Amino acid sequence: GLTSVGGNVPRARTTRNALALLQAAGRSDIPVAKGASRPLRGRYAYAPQFHGPGGLSLRLREPVTVPIAEGAVEFLYSGLTYDLGETTLVALGPLTNLARLLWQRPIALEQARNIVVMGGAVDGPGNVTPKAEFNIYCDPVAAEIVLASGLPVTLVDLPACRQVSIGREEALGLRSEHPLGKLTLDLLQGWFRKGPARERFEFYDPLAMALALDPVVATVAKVDLDVGLEENDSWGETTITGGPGEITLLQQVDSGRFFRLLAGTLEIEGLPAS
Image (cartoon, rainbow, N blue to C red; front, side, top):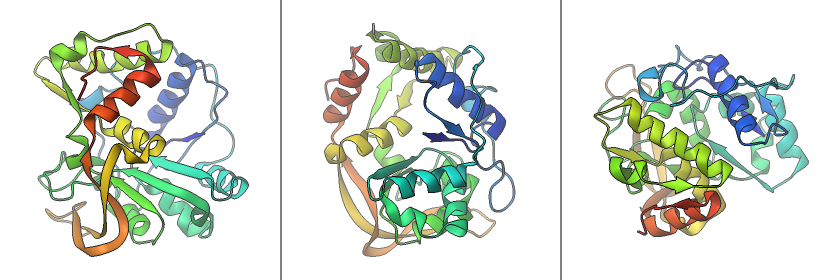
């Protein structure tokens, strides 16, 4: 299942996008639960300039399905307690839903096999400030709660994501006859076409999903991390404070293995071989 959260655009739009993408993929059977519309402190820093005001780089048909009645916290709790120790959570946005789950149902996340988080910019420049990555910056209080929880968290940060990218000409030349491959290429190629100055696309969320499916796609290190909570230049910054620690941080990505997994799953022709 999926849970929504405010991100590049408000929660109402991210929820609609989740439903529309599932519909386009022929998987409207997968439930979507509405999550947080606000961070634990302040408000989300929306970024419509990245994927457009709708949050996607293309227009999709309006979904005919609606979110389930259950909210994100209860939905996550139900899933985690049903499949004890078998669930991998992949967080591709601000960590507000997971932090709220820890507050309201503190033992639930202990049942997760792994929690893969796309976020942070450890030892590398951020993408929303010089030091902060967008997902963590949107709700650093939630990020600190999750990362300090002692739970099995694997962090896929910007320095890792920047190891798997594709240039404009390569991307516009990709082909697929698979429905999901076509949808993926519509999103990817649409991103380039909407920004004539865009030269490379970095695979942030796909790398997090790839790691959940194939943990040996990257080497890792165990570290302790701190999240900047001062309302200054360090807001949302992720800093190593020691190690070995509780957080699993990606190090070297096997780009060839990543692209082979992507190509094989979505039947995309023309992806880089390494």
